[in-house]
Each structure stands twice: as C-alpha cells, then as structure tokens.
Image (cartoon, rainbow, N blue to C red; front, side, top):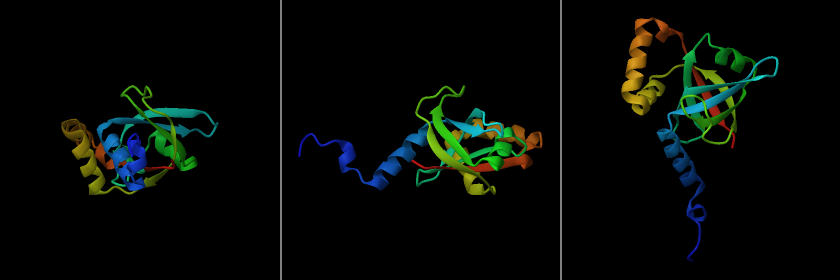
Length: 142
C-alpha cells in the first residue's frame, strides 16, 4: 500500500539497529547525574554503544564526581549533545552502573574515535591516569 511510513515496515530489532547506527556517528552525549542535595550535574562524555543499542559505555576517572554520584543514585538521564554539552536531542531516562573494564570496550572506543582516542590514551598512560579509569554502563529505558 502506498503512503505507508517507513516506521510501519521496520521491526523492533530494525529500529534498535538503526538507533545504534545513529549513535555510532554521534561523538558525545550528555550524562545528567544527581547530587545528594538533589541538584543535577550535566557532563558531556564520549560513549560507545553496544550492538543491541540500549547499552552504552562511558569511561572516566575513578575519582570523578560522576562516579561518586552514580554510587549514590543510579538513575541518570542522557541526551545527544555537542562537545560543549549543548543538547542535540531529548533527554532519555537511564540507569548507570559501575562495571569492570574489558578490552572489548576499549576496542570499541578506538574504533569509534580513532586517532583522537589514541592520542588521549597515550597521554593518559604517560601520566599514569590509565590505571585510574572506571567504566560506566548506561542502560537506557526508553
């Protein structure tokens, strides 16, 4: 039937793969976490998306405010943004948890960010900060 929208012929798994492909091309999302006093903190971060599209990984310093806030409140929000944190999409509710590092996650960052990641990683290793990384797993709930 003519006039049928593309969304009506895509399966749920197709939509998930499409969302994942779009997120693979976006370099940043804004991670909004909550402080103990209830105020919100927005931080633009690099992220990689797992193939299923609803799981994202972020890395940060283990002593960062993000890690401390996530230990207290796992409920977060994420939105696509530019490098300054200006929103390019709507906020999505999510749940964050601190997880162990894996080579696969770092390989995904290398694949997505290429030379920029290599330079960042080089200086991180040079300064000894590489050992202080924490992976944050963000699961969107949309």
